Image (tube, rainbow, N blue to C red; front, side):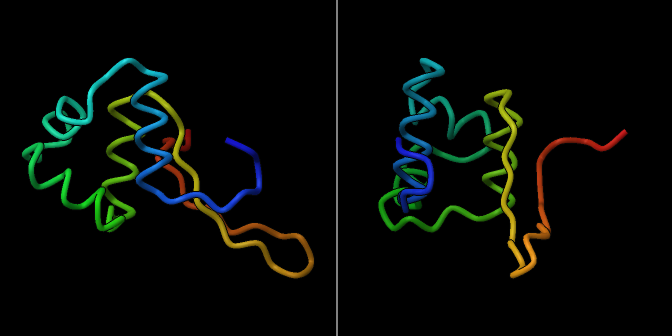
Length: 83
């Protein structure tokens, strides 16, 4: 996927699963959801911020989301623990 391109959350999750060689059904189970329920959330593109953090943890990747202020300052949320 191109950096800066607007991409649906569900498409990012599907691509990440493909790269990590895990099915959507297995990912759903690992985050404590049924494959049917998680599949509906993907179809509607209604995956929550908390679920995105769980997905990052399960797939051992960093999930970040940020607001970028006009002066370039970023306010971030991440699934990484700060030490």
